[in-house]
Length: 249
Image (tube, rainbow, N blue to C red):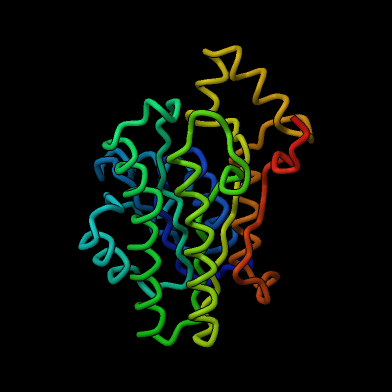
């Protein structure tokens, strides 16, 4: 088996492209993965098993539901690793952002990860586990990008949440880090690039390494952060953005 043999990991937002890649990478490393998303259980479980086999278990959970998150954390057997990957983006010019859209992105991207991380820390401390938390941030947590102000604000706040957790719980042996993707060739970014040539041109110029990131590249960084090679890493934001934060565009 791999470096995560005998470990149990829980991944939110697991039905999306990045979440699927992370879940698959952790299974490949030897972990048992509890995959959470808002898909109905039958649909989600079938999708997960097709990619990751019987070492992956699916449950339908909304990260804005604190009771549901607590129950999922408590039910996971021998929990060692928690990945907060659930998130949404609703692009709009700043002056057109509605209060409802602002609140929705805040609830899922930031408060949802607060629910998850707090429940995980409580479980780790109760079990005496040197647990590991990785939250999915974004390169726009450090550099603004047009028409996603609420999303960028939540990702910037997520970095400080992570650093606070890392500082307060280092003595418990709990590590907490952020992986910050750039413009990933998946999901909303891929769909927008295919239908909007202006966006596609802007995105292409934003990546100094010359190509959008793949979900598998993001998953590889997560696998590193939760593995033994990163045992001294906590409170860090790992950019996997192809250099976008360098600002060449």
